[in-house]
Amino acid sequence: MSESTESKSLNVETARAAVLASGELEAFEGPYFRTGRVGDWDSVFLADADHTHPDFARVIVTRRGQAAREIAIGWADYAEIIEGDDEARNAAEREWVGTRGRKPMAIFGAEAERHAYRVVFADVLAPLLGRAAAPAAAAAAVGGAPARDFAAEIAAAKTPAQIGAIDNAIRAVRGYTADKSGTDLHLLWKNRRREILAAAAEPAAESTPDAWAPVDHVERPTGETAPRAVPRDHLPPQNRAGRRAAARKKGGRR
Image (cartoon, rainbow, N blue to C red; front, top):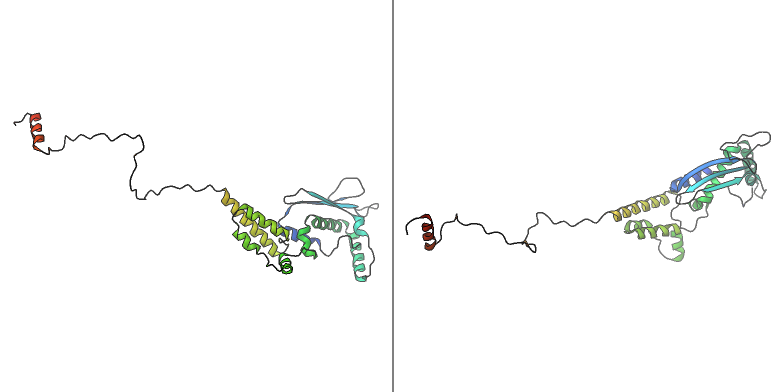
């Protein structure tokens, strides 16, 4: 197997676990197999005298926010062994090819799945392969600047624009790694973004006066008429002229 082809140091179980932990996998189909250049893809392969292994295998992977990707590999790409100086590696490759020939569907299907993860989720698997871009802390150490505390920035974000800019910064340094710290950071960002969007969607609370608040005065609305006069006949006369008028009205003596 050539050094230019895919290394088997990262097995399919490890790759699958990292991809699932990232939360970025939306859909997965396959593996499917085919013999010959033309024909239908099938989810199973039955060996016979003419065909001891499938010629091609494929899977269809959909990453969140992206279109579905069809990833196909050929049997010949994985069957060739190129002898090198490392005899232990050569022996391991020969053993692998032998096992693959005995279990063509299981092994070849796993190779297609692993290859698809490495194509579609290269940023997720890069730290596991030892080819990750320098993390934020290492880059800061080289440049002499302190590392950014993304968790603190996420907690302090107040607007959708701010939380979006933090996400872009984290992705620029591949901060969402496939380990627990990277997964926790991504979860923290998603929860804070959800809180910010929910707060932005709430209508502003209307200011209502307190029913028990004291009132200094009440202004009469413009155009309101003056109150009607109330009869005062039931009140007693307040002076002599009033008493005389009341007596005449009742027929009494002056």
